[in-house]
Length: 285
Length: 157
Ligand SMILES: Cc1cc2nc3c(=O)[nH]c(=O)nc-3n(C[C@H](O)[C@H](O)[C@H](O)COP(=O)(O)OP(=O)(O)OC[C@H]3O[C@@H](n4cnc5c(N)ncnc54)[C@H](O)[C@@H]3O)c2cc1C
Ligand code: FES
Ligand code: FES
Image: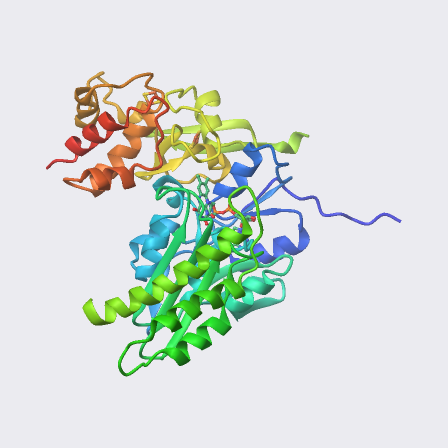
């Protein structure tokens, strides 16, 4: 018996989300292209290129930053440059300026940055700290999950990232990293945190210290309880303990960039310093 | 296989080009240099790291080596299109010449195009702003000092 195998064109150009997910259901081997900065660079590095590409650039519903209510919706095809220009959050501002180069940011997309859950990628820890949600679409329809769920589960086969949704958050928002230099290049380890006095909530995201970006719920709960929200202070011991809990949430590897021990240490120190910076900002800022 | 070849329509330096028989995976850099003969755009790392292949897409600098030609919509400007047709230099190019110390020149087409977009967005730039804004362009001859001076001077209004 012969089964009819759908012939996959080399370049697929869907113009709607439905067309894209429909095409991926029929042509599961097609490689999704956001901006292509990673997909194309991999081919140049000699990694086998895909037999066909599915370009998302023709889908208008995937692009742009819009504000509704207090929240912000970031379409998957929004370029990193456009996200930077939208001035969505002080934390994202610093993170994006450290992310690659102006040329890459003019082309690279938000969806392409988070889709594969690569641990060294910059935006997932930031979106964890901002308590974001991720909207994705597959042949079965659209679903929305918290960023925490997204970083542990990822996309199902044939699914695409549609948007990232940021709820309104006020107060201190910081991104910090250790990297070989200030200029472009992946971080060895990174910590993003937001401390929201209105919601009385702490949210942390860790980069470079696990299989994907990691949340640190135990550290978040600890610091939320250790902060005197009325006085906007906490103790030095609590700052240190928060750093220790971040290391405990980490599961780093030793690779060509760094050792696991150094990564754990870096996260401990960055965590403590971020809480110290928050305290400083409340009382002198 | 035959279907590995596609045709492309590109808008480059104000001219509409139709390219038949391009590979479906071909980069914009490859099409510019080897199919359109626009060799001013330089090929170096081919992984998006060095900026030698910088072109402008609708006025914004991108790395043509990591852009699929099949996925390029908009107006591409290469160094051939940026430079005045009469052989004269733009104020930015003049400033880079005046700052001196251009050595092999391989980084320059990319440096000039990225610099032109940078100075448009950053009037009266400081050295630190130039360093950050131009971090996507490496110079193998390390002429950074004079490149920063030239771009900073060209940003003066
Ligand atoms: C010089 C250089 C420096 C870099 N520095 C950094 C850095 O510091 N931090 C960092 O995070 N990254 C960095 N990168 C990597 C990369 O450029 C970025 O992560 C970028 O955001 C990827 O986006 P893209 O749209 O170009 O991805 P693409 O190459 O288009 O896609 C990347 C992956 O995501 C998939 N994909 C894309 N969009 C979607 C979608 N909507 N739904 C489902 N799957 C999708 C693709 O199939 C592919 O597997 C760097 C790259 C270069 C070349
Ligand atoms: S050749 Fe494109 S960035 Fe180096
Ligand atoms: S002058 Fe030689 S690479 Fe810059």
